[in-house]
Image (cartoon, rainbow, N blue to C red; front, side, top):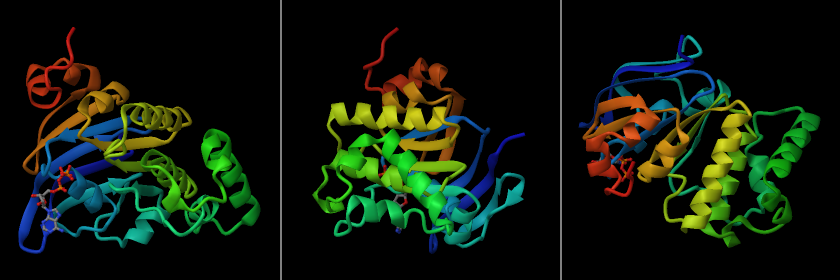
Length: 240
Ligand code: ATP
């Protein structure tokens, strides 16, 4: 039984229909990647899951419960946390304050401190920058902070939108190591990426989206070797 599923989802912006019947599922503990070109609807899928974009039809189930139509804060409370494209940290707040904002669901201050300590232990760079304003961090560090802040809400399912966007290759590697580590600690992850090679290298399974539809889904290593995927998304950079 999957932990999360989407059935025949249609969604968009006003009269504009973007998602045209998406279905997918995620098992507990998996990393699932959605890859696809610009404008395919990957971000819209994540926004529909987190309740920011309203559904036209279809169902979203999380831990056996329908979550379609719930407001975004209730969806976070149920254990789904979304790190949007472009990070959206609070630039004038310090790293520590940004992390504390992520813990707003946690009322117990001892627990909050323990969660903060665990994020600092996992990501020592954030500890060393604790008193620095978020806006002064590099793009990669801001991405790290955005993910660390999401972890403060103790998500069961973490939605990551283009975490590698605009980052130098070395930083992309670090962010993907961070994602792998979070997965190994037991968090289920849905990862949207244009960097198909990195995403499929990390994921267990993947879905390929084109113009609002899922056109292919398989084990990630099989997608990496799939000819159409290689031609369209891997720029011929992958070879056996
Ligand atoms: P990208 O990698 O560029 O973010 P994507 O696969 O995530 O691509 P979406 O951002 O989901 O794609 O966009 C899908 C379609 O929805 C595009 O045609 C886009 O122009 C349209 N779209 C996105 N946001 C809005 C909006 N706020 N209002 C109207 N149309 C939108």
